[in-house]
Amino acid sequence: MLKDILNNIQKKSLKERFLLVLGILFFLIYLVLGLMIMFWDKLPINMDPIYRYAFGILLIVYSAIRFLRLINSNNE
Image (cartoon, rainbow, N blue to C red; front, side, top):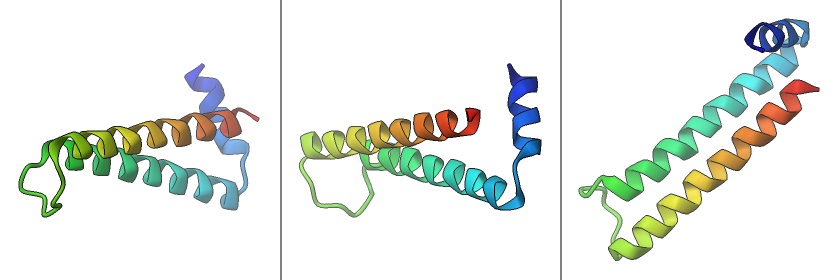
């Protein structure tokens, strides 16, 4: 499976590879931002803890959706 993914990436144009890297970068940004909001207490956001956890979970779910869309578009 990994060999197929790597072979598929090599077939892509430079623009498609750049967009793939950009998609992975933004997936990681949303994931880390969600985790920071949830667990970093000194983050200067004045929110109740329940809303911090809800917002963090929302960002993590959004990053998972972006990742799944990225994987599905990579298989084509």
